[in-house]
Image (tube, rainbow, N blue to C red; front, side):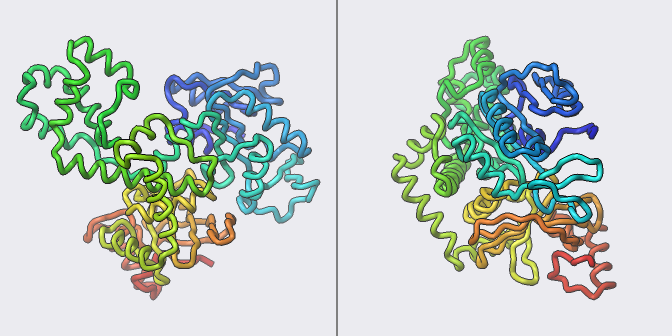
Length: 455
């Protein structure tokens, strides 16, 4: 199988910042090396091994190891365990494990063999249940993996990397610092000479971003070496640069940033309670907690109350109403909250926490998808769009999550999205809205219908 873009697990590693410049990757079972060619072309140190296409390649340790769609083509369960252990032994930071999962493709017409099937090409293929793959990883490696997407898990060696990854995934999306540029020129500290602020304007912008992200001044060991080098070249101390950056941000903006960081930490700790093995904090997160909560104990108390509050139907309805009023999503004809994946990090904390419970089980599909949350009935659906660029996009399958039973399943379900304009915040007089209105009227569909089932 030849590809010209990154595979889903490697794409997720890049998207979440786990694979970046300066981080090495080893592809265990690299096939014809499609991921390797793309990564090397992008300046990433990438090597791989494959029993068929690169059997003589050396298996080398790396920061990131990808065991992509390997376990599902191994016939004997004991060999799957051996491959998983060997890939883990090569991993310095994070191991990505992915397999084909039940419901991903139809199996009618395939011949059953052992615990899988013989494909039309005469090869073996096992389709894992999502929970089955999680159990295999945790039982074999002795750690609890993180669901990155249906059928894809990340296993971390470093608890600090794990903590920063999870917090980043659960956090409110911080505003861009570009809006502070003109304000900086008007309100720069009187103690700083204008030429100093001008000389280090790029460094100040970076510091502003860190101040707003953390809700506190960063420590020297949290700053990129290149930033400190540039300040040294300009003969400006870090304290003075921070003073300029801090004076640029209004009291209201900084207070809002701290409120967002507090909520992020509460959501993060609440979701970590679902899996105590994921509750570790990095040094940076521990500093945030001391500044914003005073102690780990106080954060834990607030997070526990927050998590239990998700069972309060009135509270969740209020959060949904707030999100709908802010045009972050829509209600369908059964009162379920529907929104795009891009909107998630802007939602009220209670909804981000509820969605975090969902993706704690399922992970996030790499393709364009829509969330449909039903907090009252304790379930959710991730609807994957096949052609999100179309006026009326369609989908061919759902990822369904039952929070009561802790179950994830993939189901073939053809749908047509009818309210793309509302979900993506398009204007009232756009061609998109006109096309949707004409389609609804021609097919006698209610305005509140978000999806149409395609027979």
